[in-house]
Picture 1 (tube, chains in turn cyan, orange):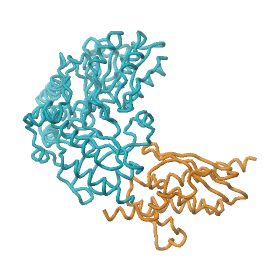
Picture 2 (cartoon, one colour; picture 1 turned 90 degrees about the vertical axis):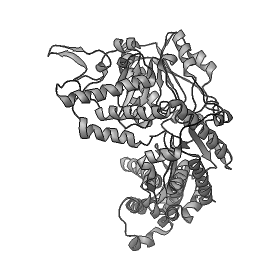
Picture 3 (cartoon, rainbow over the protein chains, first blue to last red; picture 1 turned 135 degrees about the vertical axis):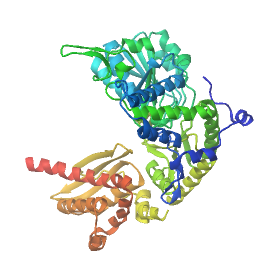
Picture 4 (spheres, rainbow over the protein chains, first blue to last red; picture 1 turned 45 degrees about the vertical axis):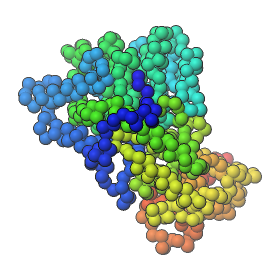
Length: 420
Length: 151
């Protein structure tokens, strides 16, 4: 996996991204908020959508809409092509061996719940262990807690150091032949830490554990190669990667998906149904009951096209440059302390500021048109680890600029003035 | 930015900077309740000393945003020395002020410094910050009121 390069190296490379043009691609970024220009720095919560994605969804309803898979008429055929076409785009996006390894779900949360409820219920039992980390989002904690309650398995969590990095020796210590499943985030939404998941996956496989990766914060911002990572499952949320809400992907190795019982029952996921019994479809359809979120799939496919047109690695380079700039600028603000200072980070800047509560910081920034997130970021264990009730979090995407960072810094100066 | 002055006005900032009755557990405290806003991390415990239906002493502990802390400080100041009934009436009035249409002109005499909280209504995302301590106070009063009637 390529870690972000140093700032000076990046300067020498050509970055084809032009944020000034890009902003025009995103209709919502041109609106005013509280009478001010919008400075949108809440991308870890959800990303804004380019015209191309919005248009693709509109066009689907204008021209292509029908139910998929079952019909024999023309619209049904082209709707199916659109849906399955999106599946193939996702396969390429993550470099999966086959499109059969791509299951459409509602988002990363559902993807993880799907694994817990099918693979988990079948293969994990009393005395087994599930290993997560202290930096996980609730969506990669609670499904495993529920699974442990149901099966009698034990949940363990690898701690993090003060910089917000996984303590690797603790990971090794907690891995044992009892560990059946490791669930780990690729990028921490609260801290921005990028985990060395290829290495962690290798280690986990050595003890016979499978690995579920939460890629919600990674997918929009860096290359994902599931074959190179050798992960067993990978969860993606469409709305975080410039796609619509309500769609996501669970990648799973084919032989694993084939071994899993159904998730939800209903139409589409069966081969035959009689009152006495039913037989189930092969993956991925086995896990897609009912009429799918076709517009969502079309949207996430268009999002993949959008990202690919700039090149995922160019995006990673650009955002890393912005992260370095933002980190340096925020460090200059008196009284500001960054939370999450790992050596390898994604474009997430969490911080505390004097003793001003993040909620107040967020409200005052909001009045200046600046959107950040305040609170525990669905990562209460992280807050507990740092003994904080909450942090303020700015998170970057492809359309953010140095001017956005400057606006944030000026905004924070105004915050300080209010509390003077 | 002028709108902010409606929210972070001087009384609020003062009560956030120097909250009254803060980090204080009153002697002979006989009512207490805890509450929190899990969504944003405001968390307080309210302590009351109530004798013969009168709130003799008050105190609170905890952490939270400026609005929640100032509201708690203002709230306790306003109920100290009042009867339980007066405190409950004040709770209803404040709840009404923060969540419904409220004729400020007509009722302003009763509110005193609490008027400072009226600006919160323009910030719907912050209303829960302002009302938190009031709910805790109400729970603290009524929780023991139940005990009193069962004895």
